[in-house]
Amino acid sequence: MKVIVCGAGQVGFGIARHLSEEGNDVTVVDSSPALMQQMSNVLDVRPILGHGGHPEVLKQAGAADADILIAVTASDEVNMVICEVAKNLFNTGKTIARVRDAHYLDPQWKSLFALDKIPVDVIISPEKEVADAVVRRWALPGAFDNAAFCDGEAQMIGIGIEENCPVVDTPLNQLTGLFPDLEAIVVGVKRDGRLYVPEFDDTLQINDEAYLITSSGDTERTLKIFGHEERQARRIVMVGAGNIGVQVANQLSGQQAVLTIIEADQERAQNVSELLPNKVVVLTGSGLDPEKLVEAGVREADLILALTNNDQVNVLAIMLALQDNCKRGMCLINNSAFEVLGGRFGMEAAINPRAVTISSVLGYVRQGQIVRVHAVDDGSAEVVERRVGDGSHFIGQKIKALDFPTGVRLGAIMREHELIMPRGATHLKKNDRLVIFIIKDAVDAAEDFFSGSEPSPQKSASKKSNKKADAV
Image 1 (spheres, one colour):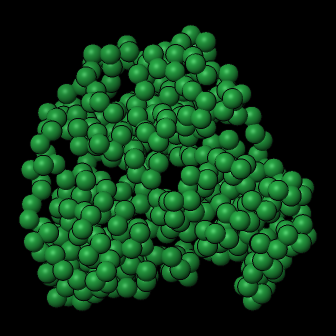
Image 2: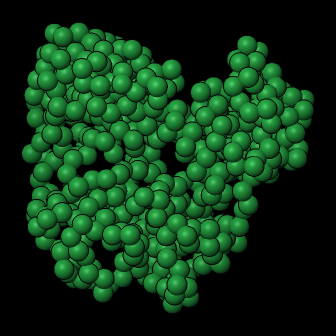
């Protein structure tokens, strides 16, 4: 597949990395020589130096032959222009644009992105995606990562294995005997920095991070069995009233939560207080001011959310609040170097907006039977929902008879309106929707396996080319 990525920032880099590692023909366009040099030094992509909205640049990038163009520059307007030029002049296949400003996303203006106006096939709104992720984490305290699949019937949850976990040292294949009606499967384990798919006789150890696929109705019970009985927070202090904060506040205010927001910018605080429901209190001040935190009620709070665009402010605000008796903390982290703090010092979760956006884009890029993609552990693995299409070689076969690639684990099956937890004797049928955990290095093999073709270890190698000969 030929893909053009316009924008070589963190999101563009992440998207290009994923797609190039899967063997796609990726071209990256950006006007920054430094970013393009860094990109070409690290990734197997074709770099084009220039403005993505200029016709001659898109022509050089191969827009006329591209299957997908992804515009993720820092400017909403530039992203929209890039898609418009690509569609109108080069008839590019699918166009995807990142649009942050909520003014463009108001439902009353949805016709703006029609083919006869600004022809964008898919709009990605990072603020909305991240806000939804924050609320999902709030809804499942104890999970440092979670995502919904199969129309919400299945959940992927990431949980830390702590000293109070009752199933430490228990072989995974004994969990079914201990909890015969539990609809949950351990699909991935991270230990000592390495993420892998466990064998069925492996055990969980203290300080492991475990990824599970569960029935949504059994998710809370699963958390308790694995030692997490945290309650949903009802008294919440939020630091930061940007676009993400406002969207989170709107969602939480409808969940019977008592919410107080601290915003450093006085004008922004005033505007937000007028937009949000009256029961949401907005204070002007710094989230790093201990007195302001106390005024906001941090000593009685169940949770502090730090949602500014400054990682250091977010981390320090969390630490100050936790020292002042706040029970739990959750924050946004853009720099992956800070993600190791997630789960430490009482910080319940660190949400990376870049990773959330990349997951959303990948879900729209994938072809064929892919329904949804969720990247985990900064792209070390992914959870994929895909349909079983016509002619699949495993239709009618029992799962125990299938030779799944190394690094792949089937976690759930959606058949019509019924969620099935896979067992050895389970048969796969046409139109089943599968939820699959895949280690990054196994993505190509998994695609070959589930699409029905033979695994091809040389696939990625054959894709290597002289793309770097076109370097800046």
